[in-house]
Length: 146
Image 1 (cartoon, one colour):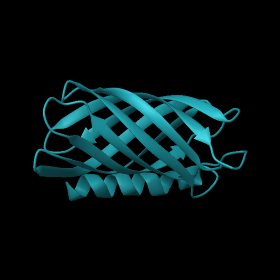
Image 2 (spheres, helix red, strand yellow):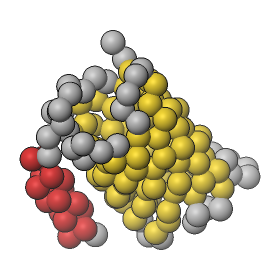
Image 3 (cartoon, one colour):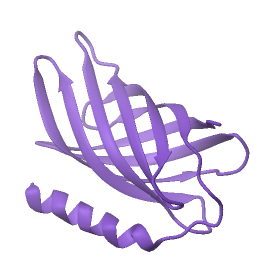
Image 4 (cartoon, helix red, strand yellow):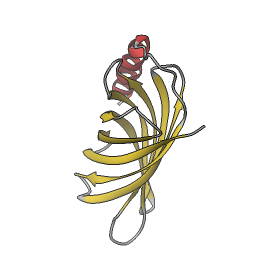
């Protein structure tokens, strides 16, 4: 597990050289999606806080629509914007809580997001690597903060 996390950190550090033509601003947004392992939908919120022109801190919270009880996913990711395209990728740490237990792991993310105007629709694929691996497909909107 430690080796996987170290690999993700090394890949993100290597990607730090990716540049972006225009300056970033912070974003706040909402999303909905589906988790394949839980076979359930999810609703959530996220922030995007620029660290450089191409790299942003990307925390998010997922509320899973489970029967009986509450299941939450807490994510702290680094998002790398691919220069000249609407694509992004990244990864980070994840904590799933609910039902009296918790499960820590890591995420790998990839997606496509429009970067024009004040509202940015996006689609994201998120791999959750825990005791069990799952895939999550998310669709959402990010709003530029001034």
